[in-house]
Amino acid sequence: AKSRQTFGDKLNSLLANFRTVDEDFFDDLEETLIESDVGFETAVKISDELRQEVKLKNAKTKQAVSEVIIQKLIELYEQEGADEDAKLHFATDGPTVFLFVGVNGVGKTTTIGKLAYQLKKTGKRVLLAAGDTFRAGAIEQLAEWGRRVEVPVVQKPARSDPASVVYDAVKRAKTEKFDVLLVDTAGRLQNKVNLMKELEKISRVITREIPTAPQEVLLALDATTGQNALTQAKQFKDVTPVSGIVLTKLDGTAKGGIVLAIRNELHLPVKLVGLGEQLDDLQNFDPEKFVAGLFGGLLQSTDADQQQE
Amino acid sequence: MAFEGLTERLQQAIGKLKRKGKVSESDVNEVMREIRLALLEADVNFQVVKDFVKDVRKKATGAKVLESLTPAQQIVKIVNEQLTEVMGQEAVPLQKSEKIPTIIMMVGLQGAGKTTTLGKLALKLKNEQHARPLLIAGDVYRPAAIDQLQALGQQIEAPVFSLGTDVSPVEIVRQGLELAQEKKNDYVLIDTAGRLQIDQKLMDELKQITQLAHPDETLLTVDAMTGQNAVEVAKGFNEQLNITGVVLTKLDGDTRGGAALSIRAVTGKPIKFIGQGEKMTDLDVFYPDRMASRILGMGDMLTLIEKA
Ligand SMILES: Nc1nc2c(ncn2[C@@H]2O[C@H](COP(=O)(O)OP(=O)(O)OP(=O)(O)O)[C@@H](O)[C@H]2O)c(=O)[nH]1
Ligand SMILES: Nc1nc2c(ncn2[C@@H]2O[C@H](COP(=O)(O)OP(=O)(O)OP(=O)(O)O)[C@@H](O)[C@H]2O)c(=O)[nH]1
Ligand SMILES: [Mg+2]
Ligand SMILES: [Mg+2]
Image (cartoon, rainbow over all chains, first blue to last red; front, side):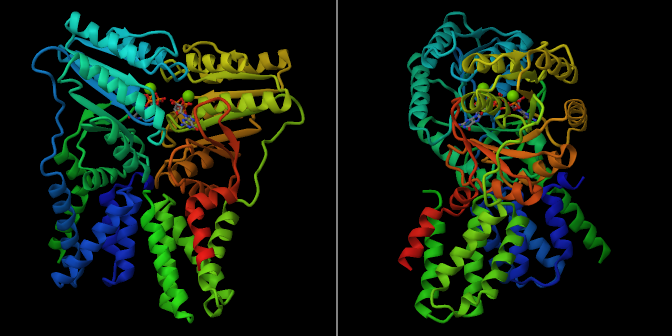
């Protein structure tokens, strides 16, 4: 269907239909990038660089322009992500703690459920902390995931101090020798100062109990979010040591361009991707596979064009 | 903070126009480009932006803005007017059925804010109309969705009808409506599970509920932070369910909310309410002119007009 067109598909049709390389073409290119949610600044930056590059290489034919553009895109993507580390890090000794943060409704709790399932399958003993004591039904939601995956959940009554729930959970993870503790937190918009302070406190409590923890602070971002995703990442980075992104709801959009924006503007690695609501709808992010998915169709079709000529 | 670039760009473009006194076609192109970028930066869908800028240009030319003494102000005025017009001039109230109950169904993507908004709406109706709403727990998929609705029902003191998670949502709604008849509830609000507009099975389920309940309002709930995808979502839900209105949530954040314009442009359906927080009282009526100002960063724009 049309709505499932990938970024590569769209670029392809743009490249297939242009007549001359003029300002209109670069406007269209910019729009294709923006339409794929690469983020506004990234789109402008990329199309400016491509404009230069096309001029520099004096590319005139359709084939030449297409090649320059594709080459440049891949180059940009790889260069920006050169020293990115997409792996999840675990403690060498004692419990590993992953803290999940993000704005409202992006998929933090669901991701914890899915990840608990994955980790458990690899033989790890997993504990969950119901650190969202605020949203109606949030504790019950995590408890339900705990039941499904069969892992214990540390919880207190609704409205309890989240930092104290987290404290209890870290203690228990240490004394009962759990391998991994996954900490859920309430959704909060990045411009709410008090809520962001509360998060800082939660993060501090963890580090006080285990100096090397949290090993990961994972920011969940909804893949269908627009420009605000970048602001979210910037602001959360300011209060907690965000170490990676969980890109959720990628099943709802074929755009995926946001990964480019995140690379380009934030230099935060995507570590996990959410592809649905079920237990096994979570995957490790594989940059190479992703690049193939993003640009793959593109490369093939230019090869085909070449053969035709 | 994140949009300083825009203000500066506009200031430059408009400043240039002003110094020249007389304005050429290419000056106007530059201003149009700034407007285009401003809208794209606010997450308005690129196709919607294209049409919008075309209309603004036409109006600007027709009004002979180029030859006027204050071209910058006039263009800004035209943009603002056009934006307000596209978004529907005035606030549109909730439909009310002649016979009770008025039935309201919430639909939308996962995590958009349907359940929270449903609670807020019920409270609003209680406060403003002394309504006696019944809430129907029609989400049997998301873990603890029913607990969430029940907790909200308790907070706002409204009854919640649930049959657990082993009964189909269609059946739950059928029995819920029967109960509402019996208890003479004047409003029924139906919570549904979040779903993708391309999930045919779950969309069919909503169609069945629609055929059964004939809701007076089918409210598409959309996260105000949504990017370019907003158009596909709005189209998908509208084409399959013929939505009657839209609720834009999470506007208490710092998003510019360009999705509002996109949704309105592709569905023609009014945005009725905006969510501005997590509390049950954080629901407000939608005002197109205020939204227009927000999308354009109009606080800035007004200062610009005054300075110009
Ligand atoms: N389609 C899809 N839905 C998802 C995905 N991840 C989460 N969801 C759904 O999104 C909704 C919100 O997920 P939650 O896990 O509750 O999100 P959260 O960030 O914990 O939300 P708050 O705690 O309210 O801030 C639920 O309906 C989930 O089932 C995903 O990868 N794909
Ligand atoms: N800040 C803010 N948060 C909101 C607003 N509306 C809803 N939320 C939050 O967004 C998250 C998701 O809201 P829900 O009402 O659970 O969304 P939903 O559409 O019912 O989600 P699913 O049933 O999983 O599809 C929760 O954390 C809510 O508290 C709003 O206007 N502002
Ligand atoms: Mg949660
Ligand atoms: Mg819900």
